[in-house]
Each structure stands twice: as C-alpha cells, then as structure tokens.
Length: 180
Image (cartoon, rainbow, N blue to C red; front, top):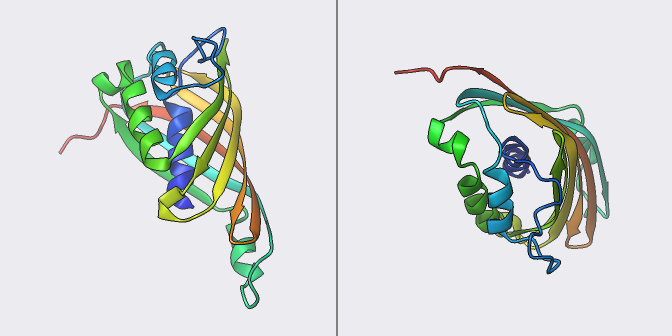
C-alpha cells in the first residue's frame, strides 16, 4: 500500500496541463502516450523535492475472521514524507516516467484533465504488486512548477474485502539536489 500511495503521489508531481483533457483522438481511451504528451507540457523545477502523503481515512469491510481492525485504524493519520531529485531531463520530459509507472502498476487512465493549474484524474488499477484485486483512484488538486497539492480517494478490494482510503498528497521544490 505504501508503494502504491507513493506512486500516486509521484503521478501527482509529474503531471502537465491541458484545456481539453488527454484523450486527443476522442476514442474514449486515454493511452500512456496521450498522458505523457500532456505531462511533457509542464515546466517543473529540477532539483530536490519533498513529497508528503497523509492517510486521512480508511474503511475496510469484510475483514477475514481474526484480522485486527486495529491495524487498519493505525493507518489513519499516518504521514509518509520522502525526498527525491528530479534531473533537468526528467523535469522537461516527465511523461517518460509516467509511462514506466503505468506499465508496472497495471493502471488504466480513465480521466486526465488539467487546466489553469488544476488537475482532475481517475485511474483504475488491477493486479497491483502481483496481488489479485482492483482499485480505482480519483485525484483532484492544484499544481505548479514548484509545488502540488492533491486529494486522493481510492476504492477497491479483493478476496471479499472492500477498502476505501482517502489521502492527501503534496510536494514542494526545496532546492538543488544534494551532491556527494
């Protein structure tokens, strides 16, 4: 789950802008290439970024007998902060990163619309991390060259369980990448 949330946060960080959405050919399917084309329009600050994901709420139905609801409740309020460096090349071509992430996570972009610094997107993922199940993620927020702020709602399940997770993600450029 941690890796999924960090991937979603990274998705938020490397997004671009569009007035009409990513479905350029109007076929109802948004390909990784169409998303990458949109993302490559954004100008990001190259350097070190600090990215934070906070789990706002978690609801799970259908826990197996004997499973502890305490573990689920302990996820609420959990904040994960990480730092990453974005090279000048990555900052000018963020779409290449997204394509690789989409292939690894078995995700399909259902909606990808950006305009005026706002983002609204929906992805549907299956077989995450090799495990059966599926999840839909809806993301809304604001972005700019040196920061982003998003809300995420994830709904899905597997093996008779249903899970709903609400999270907040934000990131900010903090300076040059450390050397050494």
